Image (tube, rainbow, N blue to C red; front, side, top):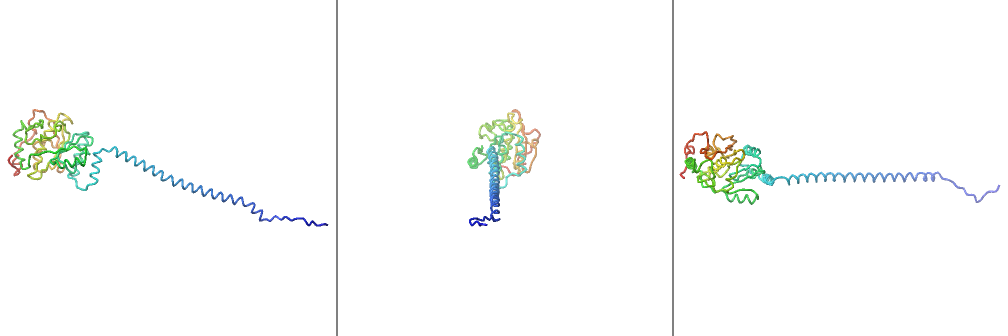
Length: 317
């Protein structure tokens, strides 16, 4: 038998077959790993980017809402909020006193509100009546000027008072003597010669039907101060001389009514019969319109002696 010297032996090693069969599986595993990894990264990135976007959208909506609310806030209210948010002074009036005035203004939309005296509550009163007209009167030209510079748009006028607290008894007596002439309860104060009448205010003041009048000025805490005799008398005449607006009634508030002059002048010209209530040091009166031929401020009153009521606080005119 002849041997074949050129014959070749081909041996298939098992490991070669194993490597060939497992390579594709390994590639698939790596491919699956990378796909899973990038999918996870993409998902996390998408999730993280979505959160700020939602928050930003919410913040933008809130900012837009706040901006819209601020834009619709009346200037007088915004001014008052800023003022009281940045001041630490105690209010001149008590909370109950302010609440009493606020309640009347709330029931009188678009009220004509006349205020004697500039106080810590000035901007607050203007804000409480932002739908109406609020006018301030004060004895200090300097304070009026500063107020107008700091708060443009506010309506305020200075008043020249010619009275003194020490003259109160003589002025009340003089007014009683002229009750049917210059000091009658129904008249145009612009032409009045009554010593207690304020006749140098802007002309339109006497034509307005005032719904609410607050008397918190001028100064009245010492004999040489102007006192509030004229402001109380003027408020009483304005209320009784109305043309009929506000149902023919005027709410008149007198602050510091526990002081002698304020109390006596209120009884004399605003009348106890018209007193609604007293809250702390604030008297609340409701004065009704009268006919032109009326010559008595009060219907039910026994007139005491002004001199005796005021004691030693008197002085000749």
